[in-house]
Image 1 (cartoon, rainbow, N blue to C red):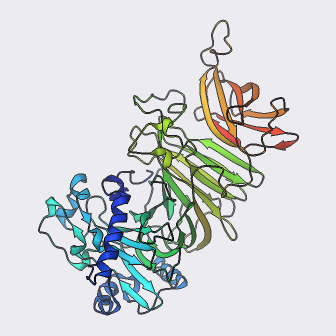
Image 2: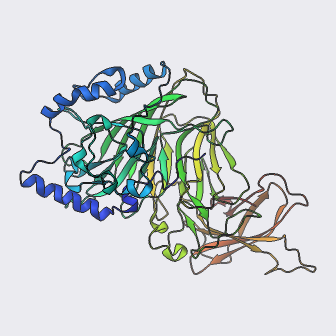
Image 3: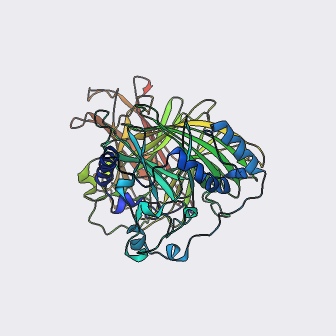
Length: 559
């Protein structure tokens, strides 16, 4: 439904190869180069000439590239490809690779000394095919001097005990790749991985001092619809080698799937935050019921208010919270909405937030304290949020849709957020758009404007505890929402106006008070359920104003 699980889509680095190993590998590569040793996998232009036939047989239209491929050429290729019937990737993976279990696949190790430098501050390592990562992607390195097809070489890998003695031809290809960067300009060879493309159209990006968490995708097709979700693939990549001391890297990609093709340009700048300027041209082969643009995929198991919906089964877990993201933010002119994520519904749920125009949206991890998670290995507090900002003419009229799948395991990515256009997606009608993607760590973040105070926690408990009734009414619930951020009044006696609404039942008796320990404000409101619950969610909303001006985000939650 939401796609490959977190474990299935996870780069080997996350389960056994640490970022420190990547750093050491980059350092060893530098030493080997200075000693004059050859490094397997680093292809010069002479080698490229002998390997051009491999690229020619695998590339679209059957042509090799004597010169770098510009983005507009790739747009034309995607358009031509959309006019042809879809051809599923060949299932040419050798049986012993397809049959690898998780541990045997994780035992395949890239040899760090073979790391491919991309300019002074970047480097590349490919992923081996096998297990669930069966599909092949073609990788080309290109610079102003020409192209270097990056074909498979078995000497780049230690294949582990299950495949000891095996060798595979150059036609095997790779499953994906990862890019490392020297964040410190004074130590360009001390490199850390920050970007991964692996599986369908998924990719992960992190900022400095963060670890991987949620994923981004090129596109989402029919997420949550009865006909089933479709997962188009990035099939070809052209990686432009950074020139000089460049701190950005550009990657072109070709997308292909049953319903559409596409071309992508990713101009990625690692740092704090890491950012990507993304251009895409999409060419539908057929009508698409729900096309998700700039989709984000994450995991939410449980948070500060438990699973988060009525009747949800609690989790028997020593950790107080488990999630890669804890909320969705949707920004429109003059308003910013925060929806805490929930789990535990009996069935998947789609929530739609109509926007016209959209200024930005993202899945964020706002809770960033270790004591909230108590997981030494997962380090949920260091996982980034991702923020999408439309550029140019924007995304048009449509809605940000949030898809939440009930889940009992943290290995499953059960959250999807994407912009879905209101206009029908017709066969043969191309779409072009541009947007920015930025990692978000500790807030306030520059990417999120205007400077409204943000929701930092939502807690729910029995209203009987503080305001008992006789006889007791256990269905009464007390919502406690904490706001922190700029422009909140320092005067605890300030007149705060509270706007409340509920789609069924009622939010009543609001009370707002300043929290001197944090400098923020806390809102208390009691929810009194309707006599008969509706079939779906009850949506609750609240925000604070002062002196005639809205000063907080709109809190939007489900009961």
